Length: 478
Image (tube, rainbow, N blue to C red; front, side):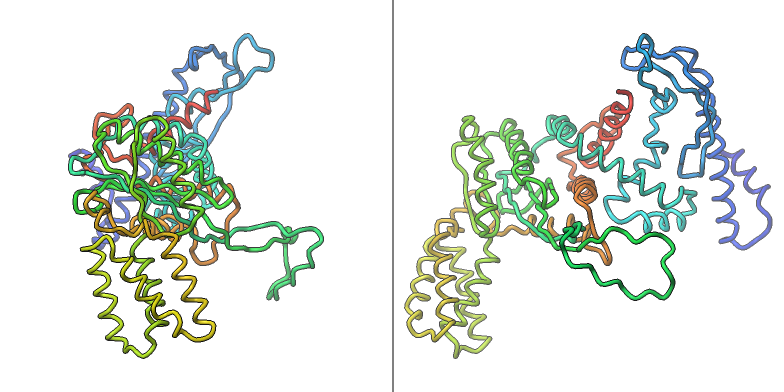
């Protein structure tokens, strides 16, 4: 280390501190790049004429040269390809990439960096971030290619990886219950226009088009799915949340299966945990989550579960209904009445019955179309009344709101997929939100696991991402 400091100091001319810092980073980048390139070349030269890949023999096929990408710049390496022995025109592998753990032409550090970056923003922004950090990243198109292929692998291998991680995950010691929720939120999707659709008007252009015009398409907002499995303490406070997301074209049953597997794994470790569904009133979402927990009931793992309509959504409806029934109330009086009803929900399971009677008594006095609006709210209360017993829910240690599910809509779909100018194909959105959901796994010390091939404890997020890279390398071997 002292030799490195002396070499850097001798190599840097007199300049301002900022200039010397930038020059030192550039010199260290080049030194690391040459070191990595020499290491890869030494590994390639030491492979020999034959190699074993998963116990299968491969023989050297042809020499070649390739450029791999790192955080410190390109690495140009001479490396041979290998062909499977005993098979005519058998499959070819690049043994160096398998031995060094290279991922889609990127070093492990760059691949890990790109995967995390793609979970948060597009690669144009990520390239700028790397550049401002004095890193020599590849071009934006190369970053995009690496990110999309890692995301594709994440989608393919996610279920297998989650099963491995789930077996090692621990239930927080303070947990008394598990709350699950399913919801939807919109995302802009690119959809090809039908052939018989009228032509799309050509936008005004300041410059003539150089390339051929793309096939016509429309941007339509479609509903994507999010799901959460949340461990809560005796006060209903979240201790840790596992988040899932799926594109609107996917079947939400697959997402619920993953959520159910998390609940099953937790119940195996601690059968005394209470289980509840807390979400808004969309019937389609309730059907899916109930189907998932019914599987556990059929297996004898879960006797019963609690159900609750998110109280925030309920209070929004009650606020509208109260304004229809009591139009002469001032805003302050209405706020006071709603506050009293909120307090009532905390003390009486029959609070909703009391409130329902008040709204029914005022129904006849509501004029015109407003009566139909009030009837819709009364129908909602009547159909969901059994899921509005919040005192019982609190006693079970469950939350009265679906805040973790609502926040997942924003942090997973909204943050990643609804940026200015963003639009998605189905496969692209599926890969991006899968990586985003993995990135958003809550880090908690009680759920630290030992990552495969590593000794240090890591969060579920890091463990999943590392295992995905390992699975990707295994896929390249086959």
